[in-house]
Image (cartoon, rainbow over all chains, first blue to last red; front, side, top):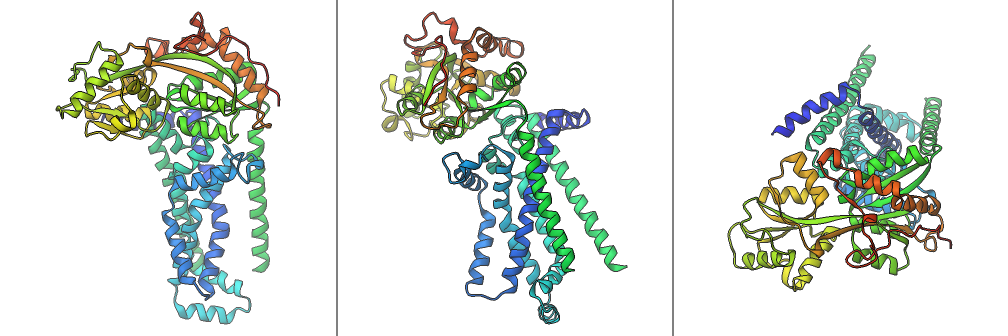
Length: 235
Length: 312
């Protein structure tokens, strides 16, 4: 119990005193996870829209597969990306291992299925009539899809927020491909793992509180954005 | 609308490129980089963080230290992902060297493993040799005595190897007699710190390196005391190796050799020997150079001959 109170006090101290090492780690966590979420959203939302739009054989199976991948264990993603970017691996020549770029790649793999799946689900939640009307009104499929995606934007934005949450909270993949190297690839989650194995429980709790605070701020920001967009539309 | 989408697309691509470039640039600062794989029990003491800061300032070399357990550390070294390997598992080191992956093998420091357990020592093994101690634990455990538990790392770590050595030296066949032999013998499959916490919670005996034990004892009121701390099988020696450029020609052998030579130099040995005195009241590691001739048993490792940059 003492560790939890100590952790809380330490979290406040670390934040108030702007501890440079903690700031650096928190900034890296944010950078890696935001970059990964954006990159994933960039292709996962269109992919989800395409899966939703076209009727093809095995569509159900594809959606099932995507949903199954929600359960992808982070360590497995880490291991696969590690084997890919390791010096002996097929992408070894790129020298990506133990860099933030490798961590971003791993998190993109991790969260893309979530965004694809929730985009499909969000679009499927729209009125069927709307799909046909929109498609009939738009000569080009992608413009129709764009309209539909805008209609389902709340569901899709939630998927992106969820993806960010999974990205910033995961430890298995970034530990594996980033190596938790101080000043280079250490993130909040790998620092928590390290401090726990060093017996510095209070510091771990403090870092956990900082991570949650960051997630809170990001979610708050997204909410404001949503409300703002909603208002603009109403006017 | 179409225009807007393409503008947005271009913007996003540019954004991604700038991000990627900024990232690469940030990691190619002036200092050269030396990648080191090491084990958790060494890293968790904080020694290598101190070395990292000092080494960057003195020699303008960034030490990129990754610690992920002996098995993974050796695996990444075998894949050519690092330049230097810093471990404490004589049998695994020997295989690594024999397979041609490592050169310039030097001893840098040692300390002792200790068997820790509940303060009241329910098995009454205090003062025994490690071999007598574990044999007594097994006899009591097999007889189903209340309150006798032994926690093993069970993860092929350096510490786990040392534990297996003690069982072997006590005359047991580890796979046949020990692992899975009863309720009293539990394998955590976790790191040293986590396993110590488990042992503390269960009131169990456990083999641990002294440094991690002291760190945990200090930070968390670990309810375990040192029960056995004398015996040649308890020796815990730390060594450094450079990845053989014949296997991986692109590794940073120049900095690796310089780092090895710094570790065995007077400066490096003093640095290691002084670490921990301030925080724990005693040094966590004894420099290898304090041994008159470390090439003799039980150390069996050169710690004096300067390393020469290996060539292909």
